[in-house]
Image 1 (cartoon, helix red, strand yellow):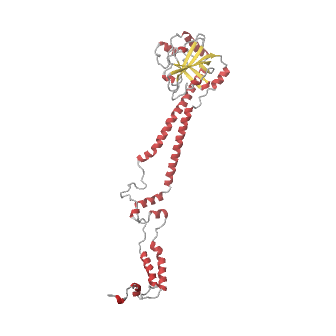
Image 2 (tube, rainbow, N blue to C red):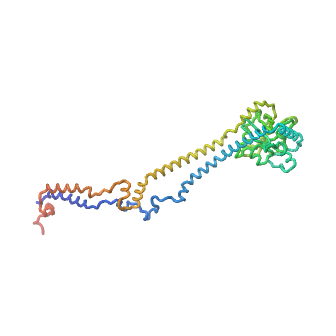
Image 3 (cartoon, rainbow, N blue to C red):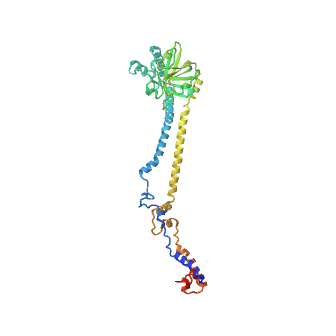
Length: 412
């Protein structure tokens, strides 16, 4: 019979295994499997170092969307701002004209009106041309005589249309520059001072990108009133005819015997301008108190629909820009508050293991030594085995189990 292994044999086997395990070198910080390490800055991986500042081109590309969006908002806002500014400026010029006429002596005003009335009486019955055909010659003596009338100011007169909130200055002529700043008086028609058998024609733009002017003239109907003031004389006209004609159809602009007429002309349809809209008013009696109240109510026109749409688009763009910029600033501030963690991450990626690791610097902890951790348990187990197991010859501990040996008598 073979001998059974003793308790010492059984206990010594795990002891040897554990003692062998105790000889394993401690794990070094930053040491691990090479295949688990990302490529360092000096290897074939990315050459960008942690904490490297972005280039000027990168910074420009990051802010380029914000610049383009802001430029788009300004482009959308320009028509609204320009229109509101020009409308306010034109009304200011008209009000200044009215205030200046109040400072002129009555004798001077009376002389101006008398000269204008005489001009209308002597006005020849020449054909009336379309104001936009540019067939008038301002260098002729007739045109120079025309410019000498109602010349107390660069403004000839003032027109107020309460229903559509128009309060504009009236200038001599219908040149492009004149019509860009107000209403033009058509040369060859009666001066806007009233009188029997007179017909004055006033022209204004529609669809100008930087001013309202006569945009709302299409809203006038028969019975609506408008007022004209020239050299201190205020006249009231009531609309009695609204028609659309071709540019060469000017017969309705001729004088009517015994009538005191004023026709307002603008291009139509809106943005197409192939026809002319004619709004004609006849002079009616005026109540001074009512006239003053109606003219005072002709405040600048409220914002139009397209203005509100553009303002809404600008608000949306600016809101998106503000939110995006705020989030970017918050992320930048968050990154700047944790420099230690970024340094530790950069050290781990580069694979450095000099002295104290970046993790020790960031967290204040040392790497765990496996040998030091299990040594007390190994020593206690060894002491217990030495005290409980009987002493055995060294040959027994290393002798193989007899149960696995063949009988001695059967050996060859």
